[in-house]
Image 1 (cartoon, rainbow, N blue to C red):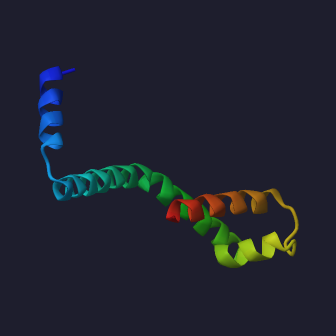
Image 2: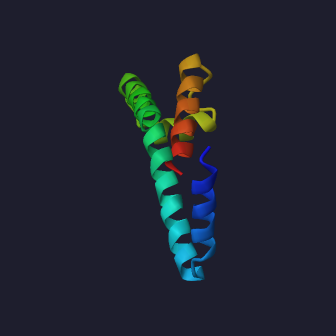
Length: 95
């Protein structure tokens, strides 16, 4: 660890005005968000492909499926449980 560099950075940050600190904080959060977004992109694409496969197989959108599955209209096939899990994961990732 480069202690001198860290100390210098800390001094610089402490000398910033409130507005400058806010700007720096915004930049750091944007950078972190971008890194997280890039790291989940392959997983998100995989989920979308899985959903498309189910949609093609059962000829309905994932939204329609999920509503019908949650009301018990479709039964309890293992495919439906998998589809619902993938759909919930995909919805969570969208947030």
